[in-house]
Image (cartoon, rainbow, N blue to C red; front, side, top):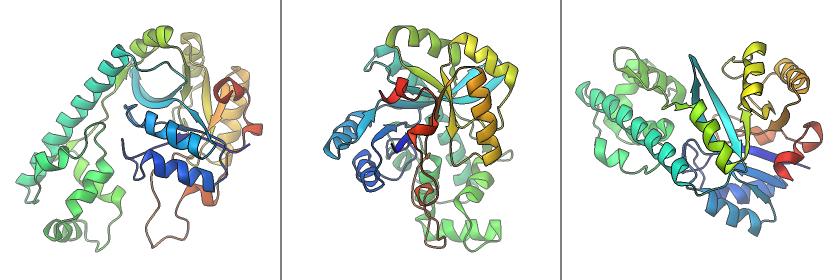
Length: 287
């Protein structure tokens, strides 16, 4: 059975609404899917309704940026009970912190000659502040496009190049994520339940056996094995570790948007499918 347990919508940094995502999933013959927006659950009700319309089983999901000691990593949280006031407070606080960090950088860009209505841009996003879409807003203005092309010495710079130059530049500021205490997440999980999965671990290189053993003892349930961010070698190694630790194995496309016209491959579904038959213990999440 085809599944997809990592998807992002317009409620965080995706470009499709939850309904549009469900329609697209149906065309890909996906039978179970999870919307895992960053630090927000606001799109879940719309996603559930749309999935049921297309006969797709919706899985409650969320992606979080968490910290444990000096470690920073991503987790996917599935099948928790919501709504919950403490969960809402945690997510709202992380959103406010990210909004404040983004505001500071945008104001610095104004001082550097960019034409930006800071309040107008930020007010478009009521939940997680998506830097990819903020960049799109800035590029809407021809003066800004010309300035970016001139400073990057590239007539058509990629989105990731622009983000690196203006949002991860020590001279302007580094827009780090608003990390949440993992201990607090684990404490909350005792009340609202669900399964916690280490998210695309090979993407940021946090595959560490001793660290994973520690996470297992703390209550982490599994690891994302199948991801377009992973090489075949990484998939094999993560699969091995997951089975040694008796982890649930999951998979997701990490879909955000279709790439531009200059590329032939426009999304991971053109080369990457997630079949539940290859994922140990996946029934504990998809039922």
